[in-house]
Image 1 (cartoon, rainbow, N blue to C red):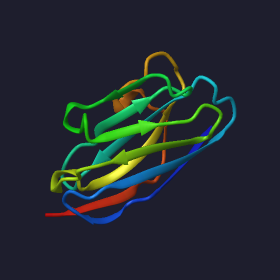
Image 2: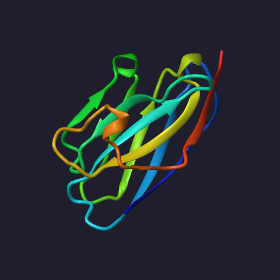
Image 3: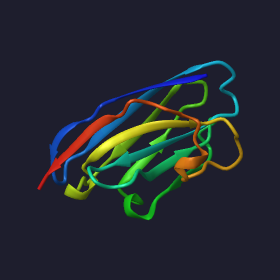
Image 4: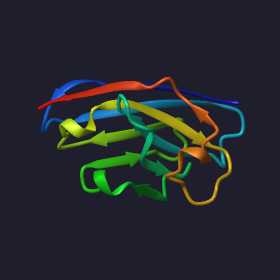
Length: 125
């Protein structure tokens, strides 16, 4: 089992920044990849970014490249999502998720086994 708890969401204006955090706990985390996903009302859950447990490998969806940064420090049980130049279209419930299968970090929600409850990000235009 892996438990994930997100925090850091809020209401901001377009152009502002936010940093989301996710605390990861559970047994045998050495081969776990982590991802951030989001879901806006009426839309399907979509990927944002993913990172390996060591923090050395990352991947991003095209719409956030250059604006968002996923990070994790080796030895820490936390994963972060720094979001800069936020846009109205970034408004969504943001989820942290864990993939126990290792390998390259995946951007596919179906590859993730455990999910947090989400933290709301609202960007006013």
